[in-house]
Amino acid sequence: MSEAARDYRVYRRVLRMVQELHLRGYQHIRIAPGMSPSGCHWRYAVTPVTNVLRSHGGRLAVWDSAVAHYSSGMGHEFSGWQDAPHKHPSRLAEMFLSCFPEIAVAGAGGPCQSP
Image (cartoon, rainbow, N blue to C red; front, side, top):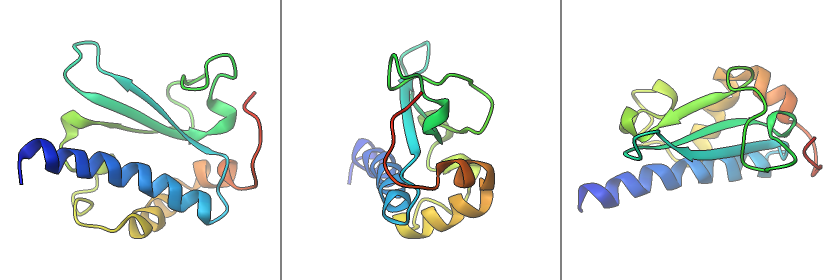
């Protein structure tokens, strides 16, 4: 398998982790995607919907409050977790809830509109 294909699987696993969080009742959690200024790395932030701009839908209102950041420059270590590359999305969801309780609390609940 090529390096690009392996990278794609990691990024997809993150998206599937958020899907798993939604299935578990955390529908207010969102992904705010982006690129590094150089354009070399894909970035995302996982945050509650209350921290996503309603006027844009994919931008954070506050960069450093109730946010879990990741950049493809971090390699396969999702949110710094060295053991994440081989975890199933459901296990990543459990790890996320444990490591980011503030986001979990703010992200709990059914569908809603961003602010």
